[in-house]
Image 1 (cartoon, rainbow, N blue to C red):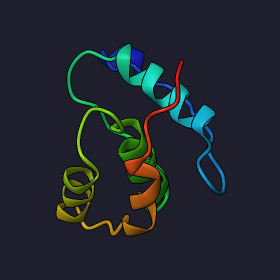
Image 2: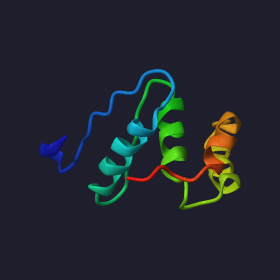
Image 3: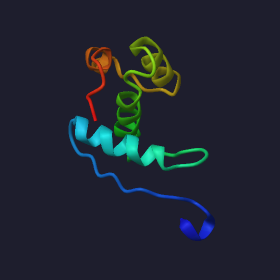
Length: 88
């Protein structure tokens, strides 16, 4: 990737996304300039990690609407999205 001018980060997540996983995701995003692609087999973990990274930045309603417009139903995260983002 780097030989083509792309940055990459490997963030293994399996099962339920923990707050520590979200913190790693946020840190990786903060080091990226330009467009970002988060990849997993189905896109669900990537979408969930993104959604949780937006806590405190957007309302749960806006986060869920953005995910829905991309084809992901993250309604099961609504309560967690309404909670304040964990402190760093």
